[in-house]
Length: 418
Image 1: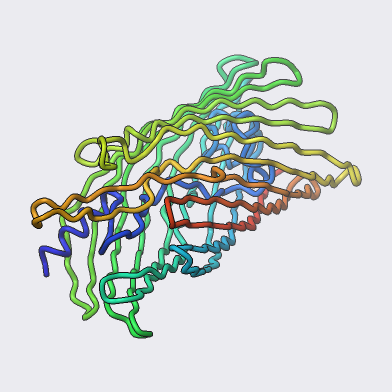
Image 2 (image 1 turned 90 degrees about the horizontal axis):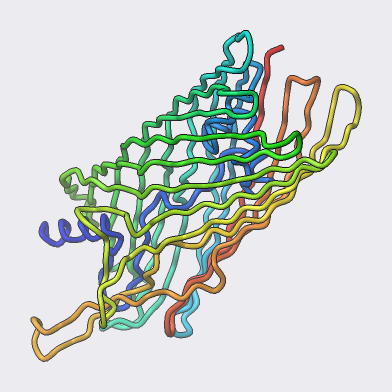
């Protein structure tokens, strides 16, 4: 039994946990950003060339150079995810809703003769794992229902620094210590009673860094560029079986790939338009080597390269000399990088002839979000921002599909000292 749990733990770390024929394959956490700033989320997270507040720690550290007053800010996010699985006509649904702290920042601009020099400290929790998925399928012992509950979050404790290199160019960097945990509980039911249960916990630690540039091309146009180094992660896994036995497993090391992003922002009177594009080389995901799977004909990467696209707009309404209202809308396309849907055992004449084959997923459509937001500036010292995002995604393979709907509500409060 101990050998079984050790094998299962290793499979989880390589994003291929399964317990039987035609089981789902789950992607690793920390590949989906839930958002940390209400202003950014309201604009579809098209924020690379804006980044003029504490959220620059997350989006573009060079934008910190545009902060000219001491600032404190914080965000709360409420995430609601609904899933629906269809396994050859067996439909099951799951839902979960959680509220978490997603951002805390402190920004301090040093007095300078000219230009700008700014430091910042903060905590951001962009990776929220909360999700419940149910599935009913036919197994050797009859109809079986599988329920998987995922929870907790992973965040970054960050230090950022930015300076003006010239009147038109700012540079910045950030360095982050990654810390958090991931919890996964899988239960299988037959004849209305639980047949087995497996709990997996991970404590997550790691390190990463980013470099950014922000250029003021004209009085109306700004351009932003960021390069995010790989995230070097260590996992401390723990397995708990149905009887409560605990199995502490060796620490594992995983490297998430680098990404590079380019953004622009254009101001036309009271209207601000923004566009971001991000490339991530997910096949470079490294866990004791490249992560690959065999689809029965050839070996290929488990993850695929992705291009994320973010569009946003903001319109300023001057309510009074001391207050203003900003209205926002945005769109984000964030392809799912994990390309596998399920696995199945192709039986041979003997056990040694059995072949485990992974089936690639079809995506229809790619993951996308529509966003809306609003912000109020009070007495030039307090900013309240609220954003709502709605998105869907579907992945499928012959006879099996998984649909997901996500709703996010994000509130950000910022205080700026006079």
